[in-house]
Amino acid sequence: MISFKGIEKTYQLGLQRVEALKQVDGFIIKGSMVALCGPSGSGKSTLLNILGLLDMDYQGEIKMDGEFYPKDPIEAAKLRRHQLGFVFQRFNLVPVMTALENVAYPLVLNGYSSKEQRILATEMLEKVGLGDVIHHRPDNLSGGQQQRVAIARALVHKPSLVIADEPTASLDSQTAETVIDIMKALGKEIGTTFIVATHDYRMAQHCDTCINLLDGTISKEAVSCAS
Image (cartoon, rainbow, N blue to C red; front, side, top):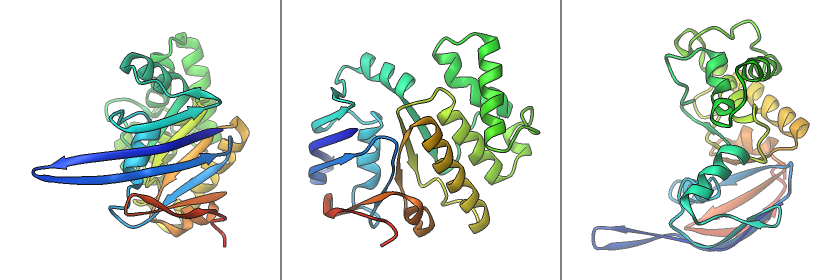
């Protein structure tokens, strides 16, 4: 389980002090898919970055499986490398790498052998339906295929948590449905928790719960996204 308590984040923009998050509390059940919903400026991306240890300048505490999130940058980097995965709206694939090399990259960082990298990356690409394009570079793949490569990359090292920022925003309806189904199925198979910031009702409806943010606070308790 992931729990967070008293999360506060303040930005200084010139002479203006902006409270992006104000005493945000919550918990997320392990293996679930949770949507962070709310209008632009509500604090979704800020909370997502904090939970993903991309922003460590915040107040409050976060626990994963009973262990506090580290405040030390080196320990935080280790946790990101071993326990976290990331999926972005714009895919963020390395253009000079093949699909196989992009997916294998987290394994390289975690010290897997070349053989292990090849086997595990190939298996994950096959699971997302891309076994026939493993040697293609991103510019030879469609947007939906690139996002599936990104999902495979996020999951190949079997992280505890995947942070996804608007993963379907750049996709058409049919492709978005495919990507959502893949994320949910693989998350359940691996036991990975997904936290997804989204404006996309299609994405939210497929999540187990929604955390609704408004002006930096949770507007109401988490509810079923289907309701």
